[in-house]
Length: 461
Image (cartoon, rainbow, N blue to C red; front, side, top):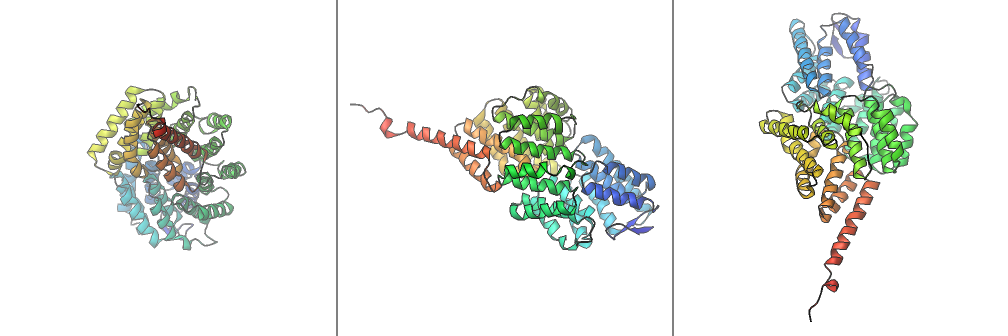
């Protein structure tokens, strides 16, 4: 039977009772709500043969970037495939089932392209829009995130139930592509439309961080706890953003308070939570701040993820954790696995591992070993391609900082200054890290020029 969902598009159900639960699932997914799995479970309990919901379940699993969830995604695809063979489904539902299969076959870009094509036909479908957005985020494709939304955003009029969430996605895509002014304005409008739009809230936090409006960013997050109190683990990431802003102000005590009581309180093993924690500890250590025993629990979790091969962004943060706790054998194993996986180069993640993941991991290891010249060259090799590992500019900035630090410690002042300049232009404003490192590089260059001055050279006779 066919029934219209909240976006006024047909879905194929054997039990109409599943429709309310399905609509709730989509809204929860858009809001990054912790209730999403509960709504999806109720949907499938009411109609286990709902192919679209099964396909969405599979894609949700793949977005988690965990090896064990791949098996669940394959199971979801098998059920969805059987359902569509037994009952004719719509072309929109068919596209989402096939997108799941694309990703399971190692081609997430193909999955996103397929969904983008269907989105143009069903522009008011906020589920498809959010799935494309999420996949392209994992793939590090901000311009494609932006063009995807710009192709359909005119369809989201005042009466659309998901308009705020969609504008929150658009804000983030604008920020990641450097259009900071529009990103801030549209993100604030999105949160005003839907006050639980955590993604839109965090998009504005990105803008305020990138453009150096630190105090404004702190106030933006402090004033709106309702926008992320309902969240799944994404809530930890918003707390991380608040800590990042405090770090820029030198409020180290507040950073540790947020680390211990908010975004690392629960010691979860989601790779996104590990990346929040590991990248913050690295930033602190680069400032000469001791972080105590905090690396230990991150490294213990990361050791169990060495063979995952699901997400290069995750692998690099597991490497940070292992190196942070001096687990040399485990970090060696992870690097060896990444190199082997990259050489196989049989799917998109393997290719990204080869061109960006392995050289970055090598550079991180050399940095830990104190081989700064070698670290710089490995990291600089991967730097132009690092976007392909996914994540945001703010998240990948930890690797940018390590690369700059390696150049400074290797005495490569010109290279460091060039990277700091490029980083500042990308960000749209200066921050404390960039200012202090630029001052350091300038002092080093002045000292070098002074030592090479003709006036100081010893003259014979």
